Amino acid sequence: MTDGPRGHRTRPVQWRPDRKATDPSRLAAYDILRAVHDDGAYANLVAQQVLAQADLHGRDAAFTTTLAYGTLRRQGFIDAVLEACSARPLAEIDAQVLDVVRLGAMQILFLGTPPHAAVGETVQLARLVGGEARSKFANAVLRRVGERDLDEWVEEVAPDAQSDPAGHLAVVQSHPRWIVEALHDALSSWRGSSSWSDTEELLVADNVNAEVTLVARPGRIDVDELLDLRGARPGLWSPYAVTLESGNPGAIPAVRSGDAGVQDEGSQLVAIALSRAGIEGTDDTWLDMAAGPGGKAALLAGLGLDRDVRLLAVDRAQHRSHLVAQALESAPGHHLSVTADSTAGPWRSGTFDRVLLDAPCTGLGVLRRRPESRWRRTPADVADLSALQSRLLASAIDAVRVGGVVGYATCSPHLAETTVVVDDAVRRGDVERLDVRPLLPEVDDLGAGPDLRLWPHVHGTDGMFLAILRRTR
Image (tube, rainbow, N blue to C red):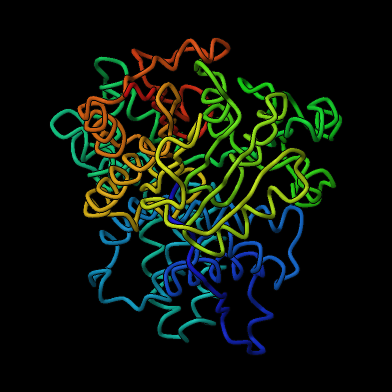
């Protein structure tokens, strides 16, 4: 689980008569970038507001999101090209104009827009944003961008792939170098060894939009009902998953009612695996720590119906606890959502039979869904979060009874947030590590184990990690 979204607002360009002369789709893409860069907004959240304000639908809305998300993802490479085409360092260019030129470069380099068309539309947008002088600057820079194709620019701005594979991939696939190296290390640990081509496949997958996946929550709706939706097909691994080709999931009645939810298969498999882990004795009291926004809690509630489970879902942030309560509102069974700090939870030691800790993390496994996230995270975040993860896991182990199990999950594959945290917990001497792979026999290529690692380029899911620990004393 990544840190929760901060509040944000859209700040579109102030309306002027010449705003009407600008292509509305490109203008909306610009508004998304400014909300992300100026207000700290999340693109996937603010885009819906911008599209509604601009009254864009269908192909126009799709082009806007493709342009905005693509520019955010490819920002590293685009900036390297713009640096080569500008007489001034990018740090000295007005932030608003820089975003405009980034949008133009994205169209030329990655969307196949004819250079003259991309330059013309972008110059018009630059004129609206920064006036005539800024439009001339945009025109000059983008004409230089259009003088070479993508392969030629790769040759020009990227380090040599043989002598510096991490640096080459960092530029070409637009990921910070430290993330490239961390993902390579995690892949190598999972496979026993890993080539840079394997890492490249993962980075490529991060730059492709993820499809929308629904979960049919047990006890509330059958998966066949969701498969009747237009363009729906079964998920690859989860028996409750349905993937949509396109469309707005919020318009689906089953999603609005809460009988179904939007949930990646990787997250579904985490809850399923925990529910299947063998334990002796009672199995009717479950805890979901750091439960916001509630997707896994709602699935756990359904998975526990036949065991008459009582589920407690906890999150320390009030707004996230509210989302959990909404997700559980119409769920059958016994469940309660509370706001509390799970590092010192309001329960007695040894209370629960099963505990899920989907810990706050850097979110390096969901970069395909959060295009701006790669540029916001730093190595310092890893250190801070791994310390919190260790405290939360210690609390989770204390909360479970002897013989019960704890599932420790993150949507980051970083070794410091996964293997290192779990290894430290095992060294305490009161838990044993279970092999997760036999719990998910329907999933192919689960690596060396014993923990579960899922990858976008291998499994088509978000990058998820799960370790299951049984308390022994």
